[in-house]
Each structure stands twice: as C-alpha cells, then as structure tokens.
Image (cartoon, rainbow, N blue to C red):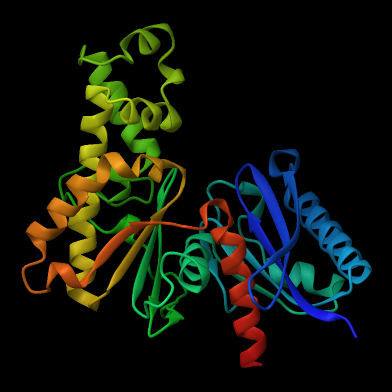
Length: 324
C-alpha cells in the first residue's frame, strides 16, 4: 500500500516551486520552473496541470499516493471560492478561478491560500512559531505580507483577506501605497519603498558607500544591495533599516495590543538584514507596548527560509483533508 503525501505549490512572480510532502512535513522531492515564461492564464494553468501530473507520476513511482494539494499565490485570493482576484506579481492569474480550472485535471482536491498566510502556517507547524497558538507571520519582500495564527489555526477572516499587516496605517500623512491607502507599513518596511527612499537620499548626496553605484546606475540599487550594504555597516543603509525596524515595531505593537499574540516571526528576502533592524524594532515595540508585558511577546527570524511556503501549503492541505 502506498504511503500518503500531498503536493505543495508556491507560485511566485519569478518561479513556481512544487514539492511532495509527507504527513510529518518532510519534503520528499521538489521541482521548479520560471513563471516568466507563462505569457497568459491559459498557458500558466496548462503548465501547472502538467507539472501536477508529473508530480503524481513521480509519487507513484516512489511509493507515495497523493491525497490532495495546497497552493500559495501572492496577492488577493478568496480561498473558499478557489479564486485569485488580483496578483500583482503574477498578472496571468488576475481574476482566475484557479481551483476550478485545475480540479477537472486532478483526481484529488486542491486548496488555495495567500502565500503570506502559508508562510505563517508553515512557520507555526515546523518553524519558529511552533508551540505558539497565537502568532503573527510577516514577510518582507517587494511588499509586506502577513498571516495570523489564532488558537492554533490560520485565521482567514470573513473575506479571506485578514492578516494584512502591510496595509495597516503607520503614517497617516505618509506616501500613497500601491493599494491606494496612504502611509501603509509597506511604504516604510518593504524592499520596494525602502529602495525608493534610499535613492531619494542618494540624489540629495547622502553619505553612503552606495553613492558611486547610484551615480553610475540608479537602478543598480535594489533590495539585496541594501541588505548587503547594511550588514557591512553602510551609514545610509543602516538608516534605512532603522526606519524599517521602527515602523515594524509600531505596527506589531498595535497587533499585540489587539490580539495578545506571544510570537511574531519575520521572514522574506528583505528580512535577511534581521541583525541590523532587530534592535530598533525591539526598542520601538517595547516603547509602545504600554498595556501588554513586553516580555510576553517574542519577535524572531523565520527558520524555514524559502521552504516556509511549501511547508505551509502542505499543512493547509493536510488540515483540509482532516476536516473533510
């Protein structure tokens, strides 16, 4: 008799990553391909279906039986409808009933979620959030994503869009965010907006080792550049991540006051500068936690790195299958 497994899919703006995952969360095998080669919705859905079929064949050859699948997509998704409403980084998926499009080609159920929610679910299951029934996961990348675990379960809210800490207002008079609001946390703590701020400072001759690079090509300043510069103690990059840390501390304090969380896990590629922004984050958090004991909440870096989304998608599938 074949052992049970689920397929995890992490669908990003650059790559699609798939994995076969055991009930214990062990990644048994994995695949990856570029989403940039998928020009439209039909091509992307067809490629996903083909890869899922290959995953099924590989599972059978290895003695595993696929029971279901979990898929994470960046952007606004409606999990109960299996629909992607808007995905800023994967435009081919805008207004796509992804589960309905894929299900006829599969002989097992598929479950959809926002990728930041699956980051939180993965870290709660097997990462830095394990053992904490009230947890917030934050992803720092091009934007700022969030996922909430309450009473040990992923909290989706009435419309499946809860946990969006990136669009909490931290500066009412601040920049206009891509979402249309003004002063979102994302405008202070994401890679895109932090790079924008740094380029503005460099244009005003701010002291930085990045000045020559900016003069040669302003587009050469990107998120990874800032992470490396900050870790090497560049003064402007350090100032940039001080802003990131303080704004995160402000937003986290508001969420902790509201929900009484005990753990906050921060991941994503921009969070690789954790050792730089940790101190200003903690200082701001402790300053603002007036009605909740600061020692009762811990903020820490993610443990699962790039696999958090895949592990979370597997957890989503296993929990949905158990509920059925």
